[in-house]
Image 1 (cartoon, rainbow, N blue to C red):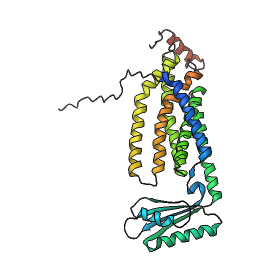
Image 2: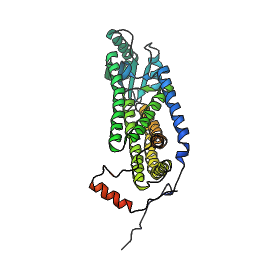
Image 3: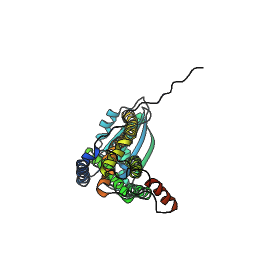
Image 4: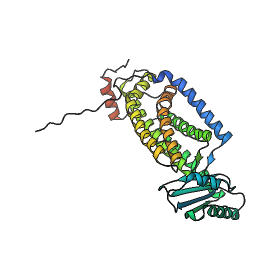
Amino acid sequence: MRLVPNFKGYDFFPHDLRLPFMRYKGLALVLSIVAMALSLGLFFARGLNYGVDFKGGLMLEVQSNSGPADIAQLRDKLGRLGLGAVQIQSFGAATDVLIRVEQQPGGEAEQQVALNKLLAALGDQYTQRRVEAVGPAVSSELRTTGFLAVAAGILAICAYVWFRFEWQFAVGAIVALVHDVLLTIGVFSLLQLEFDLSIVAALLTILGYSVNDTVVVSDRIRENLRKYKRMDLNELLNLSINETLSRTILTGCTAIAVLVALYIFGGEVIRNFNFAMLFGVVIGTYSSIFIGAPLLGYLGVKRDWSGAGGPASKAGAAARAGRADVVYK
């Protein structure tokens, strides 16, 4: 009978790793506040490059009748029509093209004129498959609803963290989440990347990823608060971050590997979405380590997690009283 060797896996990070994160918590917090302020400044000064979803306009899906579409030739031809910003992207098959034209001054008649110009320029080389028109009223409502969805997501996550842990953890979570959203918006404003509904979906996904990291670290902090009752709080926070560092880094690297592949090979249609996700995963990992947990060092947190004082909790407290507290140094 052949024996299967006992494979215990490979440790990427030593179990006794003790990186001094808390030593740099003040510097990290200052840099994060400066980055958030710069992102807000960029947003109000330059604004966002809203897509058709938020700005209004025409979206035309066509298919080439003579093999793969020549995107460069299309950009040159349609860019000379005088319709303002024209965005051309390939998606799906090599013959499929998505054309987006910004809202034209005037009413529906002007939009129809713009559509006729596009179809005339495309000629018989392309077959029209789908046309969508987004009006300014609808696009404004979509923009408002999108930002409200992000704000509601942040508040709901913070309510969950508050309910599961304590208000100090919720404050750390909300600062970390706002930090992630603001920096992502700031990068899109700086680079003037197209901001549409897919980016709102990316922001909501980033919130979920970031809070997952924050909850894992917070849960370890709560466990260590029960275990090391006399340990200095900053030392305890540093211990908790180091104990979850392997999980945090490996999860982030796995997500980044997938997102990089999608960014390179996923095509133009989802490129901005992938960029937002990629940046959000990196900045979300940073905020879990250098914002969410370190804020507890400034706010303080209770040490007694034994419960409200009922019989069971009193019995547990009495049992723990007979055990010497472990002091980590």
